[in-house]
Every structure is written in C-alpha cells, then in structure tokens.
Length: 135
Image (tube, rainbow, N blue to C red; front, top):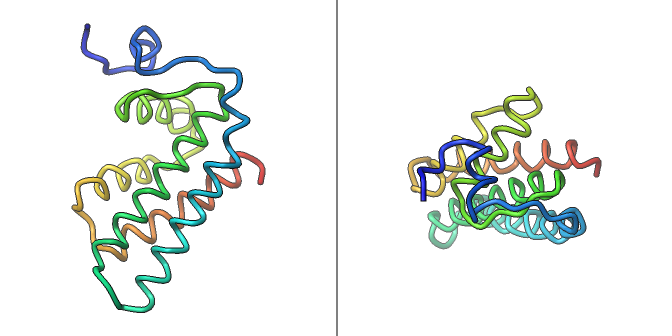
C-alpha cells in the first residue's frame, strides 16, 4: 500500500470510506464528546485524582468531535491518520476550523500538553464542532 499522506490517497485506501449513513451517528458522537469534556472539567476543577486523566478525557472529547465533523460530510474513518487528513481537507483548508485544534489533538494523544491546555483545546473544539454541525 502506498503512503497515505493526502485526502485523495485516503479515499483510495481502506482507511477512509464514503458512508451515507455516517451523519446519523453525529448525535452519539456529540454526546460522547460532551460526556468526556464534562468528566475532564470536573476532574480538573476538583484537583483530585490523576490529572493525566484530564488529558485522556480531553483527548477522547476531541477525537469524538473530529469524527463528528468528518461523519457530517458522509465519510467514516478506519484510521487516525486519514481522519485527521479528512478533517484538514474538509474543514481546515476551507477556513472553517483552526488548524491549532488538530495539533492540540495530536499533542493530547502524546501527552505533550498540560491538562489545562488539553481541556481548553477540547472545549474550543467542542464549541466549534457544535457550530459546524448546527447544534
């Protein structure tokens, strides 16, 4: 398989497929994102528990948001790389989404940001996702 490094290549690979039923799953993804964002916020505010969980929950919220955005356009991912490339192609290049939010997702995945930074990015991405999907 060729290196998957662009939206068109993702569509030629098994890692991104068109799915006309994908938009029906947006509500479930938004509910998951809200749940994880709420958990991250409560954990961060309480100061109790492992603060690495704030990063983990924030990442899960961001991941669900990115999936919702891509699903809105009728695609389903089968790999993180193609999910990010699809979001970049469909939203960032169109000027609809700040690329810093995708970078924040990648940084949260690698635990390269503070819990506060991850929570702030997850909150911003969640708010923007709700705007973009019209909810």
